[in-house]
Image (cartoon, rainbow, N blue to C red; front, side, top):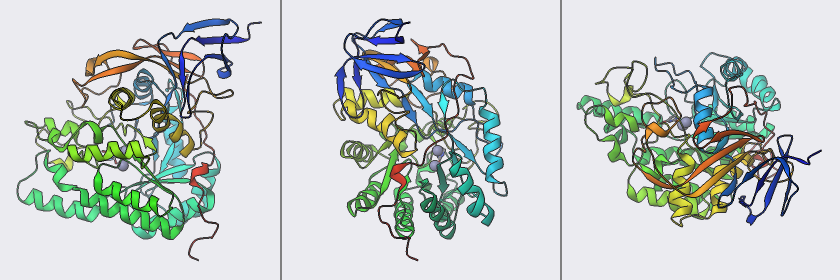
Length: 477
Ligand code: DUC
Ligand code: ZN
Ligand code: ZN
């Protein structure tokens, strides 16, 4: 009997911890050996000149999520995971979103129906808690956490999603008791509403005013408040999609005080600016996302935070809406004010190549940091490590083979999502994932998907060790 189903030979294997030349032996969908001169496998891949990286873990992406405003997400679990796999990602964690008035359990069941049999790579769910009733806080959430839904997102803005400070504290308290990770969307809702009204009264409704309605101070205030609430509740939190300097300052300050405040950023805050919203007609809506992209100086601060350890996670926040058509960016018409444009941009396939090229290729971060930010850390923070996020004996054989020299000009025609544009059109990158393995099966080779929907499996998550409170005390009371 061959000892291996597959051997990846002669590659350079990189994890968050180190980089080494060795072969990878795979059996039964798992890594079973790392070493030089491994015995022959039933199949062999020659990775000479290639990097052998753990597949990416995209811990913030939205697929087939109901929206409530008539818009429809362009990607379901098939097209979303297809695009992810073609960009070197092997695990995604999208969101099961509770509608106000709905039970959280019903939201999870609905989301499973949307995913079952459709994904080409493995997936877990974060929950979004929008209605923290006594029943949700006292029973549903603890039970779901024990069932493997160990992280949830809460919002400080968007009328249909937001929680007030009291509700945030209630949710943080459950997370503390049960050991779950809370992700927070930090923008001040009332400030945004006030600014939006003023802009609209003045006739300033074009897409570019989206950025004016959500200036940095709005994110800074909410970030500070989220940190204060986490301190009061004595529980770690993770601030998602951090866009620039003022929020980074708050996070750095809290981390400097020894608090477990984790932070995520996304490609749009490195590669776009608010000027990208200022385009003729409605074109600027292609880059409407929240928080909005800022400016070049803020991009540099985000790079500094990636280099220096402020950020643990780099996710796409893939939120796919088509530009043309009745249910995407123009759901309320071609002249709709910015406040009626669905928020979000696509990026699940371009996340890794953009960071690899501008980060590793241009010397801003090391290869180990790249793996940590895009794979190992999200796996740890959301209870999937070491099954996902590394190449080690016993881990799932989720691997992306990278050609670090491959030059690609990003164009929507190359991508595999179901969106009709990419905000990164025309950006040249060096380095591209030429083959993706999910549990030992080739799911992508040279931009062609080779897996069937249904290959991807649901992953219940463990309680994440980083969600444990630093202190032993049971909160303020
Ligand atoms: N902002 C979010 O908070 N989620 C989805 C997309 C976006 O722009
Ligand atoms: Zn958000
Ligand atoms: Zn999001």
